[in-house]
Image 1 (tube, rainbow, N blue to C red):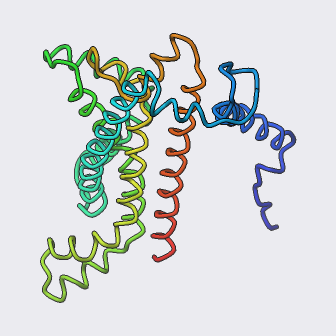
Image 2 (tube, one colour):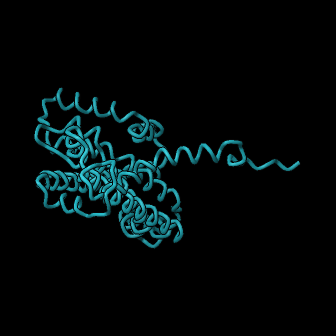
Length: 270
């Protein structure tokens, strides 16, 4: 007797639950995006289409604060993603191409741990660590925390890409008198590049959007874009905050989309 193929979509209520979850997740984002174009000072009363709040972000009274916060966010995200991607690439190479070794499962668990531990726990632990060693909080503490937090996000697409590449390519290169280093840099690295780019973009957007860890480890007077938005919201939600949030959301969507298509392109070429 042929076994019946399992299809979760056939269960009663699956469609309703899916629609409910998508509504809860995305309707608030749509509302924020729509009201960022509101001509009114109110965040609930629509008075017509306008781009004045986007102009206010760059030329208004709070523009200097948000520009500095955005610069801090992008600098930290670029450096953190670059370092995290380099470490993740080396880790993936050791885990997948390094052959069997002791504590391999433990090593994979340590790499994946930040994905499973609640972010608030990571933030508190990081803060306690910096305080215990007397490390002054500021840009550097944010950067170090983001590097550690972003490594597993960069590792996942890189390791997935490497697992899809057979080691016969490297063996053929070494049969043609290439060294292990040459086989890695000239054969394996180009094949891994879609995964590396995808991992970098994912780590970059995770660092750029992070609030909880940043809020715990940042020093006084140091702001990133998410913490600056949070500080402004505590004084009351203004339409310019909606404009900033919409731009940050759009940028995140673009980066995640690029990461997806780069990864997909690498799989298709394979």
